[in-house]
Length: 243
Image 1: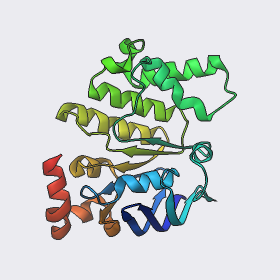
Image 2: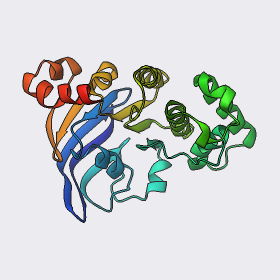
Image 3: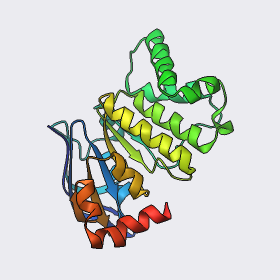
């Protein structure tokens, strides 16, 4: 089943068009990666899906509902969550409180139920359990990323948008983050992943799209992309080496 369908998506800022007629789909249960060099339009694609880009046209359907033009808060209530680049935690709040904020799209849930859900998130991210009462500003980059992902999962999304989850992290932590991404899919959440580390992204993705200057260059399964010499050398190899 097509969970996300993007057709002819154009997005612009004051400087001009960033996306130029982009088409992509994400099936229920998939991990789909968006790859490309800096400025290719990957982050803008996620922001446009979430209603965070003011000037967009085309079509964005989520679970059969046209969401283009809807406000971000309304989109969040449709079981779509966004973990932005840079984690965006509240530094003066504890780990528990940052995770709890992810449930803000679900008003009316009993406090006791939310407490159990936060506890379940800490079980899923065991490295965070001893840090649950620590302030976010005291965490390492990898710990912050885990909190950001846990916060996104607290929204109970059908689709989780992850923007550059490996950014600024060491190799061992990057491997841990991508193991978590695979586990998220195993738990039943579909993932649309923007990532500079092409090697790691393709190791977990079912399919990938490669963007260039706001347009789709090529798409396909990971093996097909790695076997495309032009794509591998110009985009995937360079991205993997620079990550």
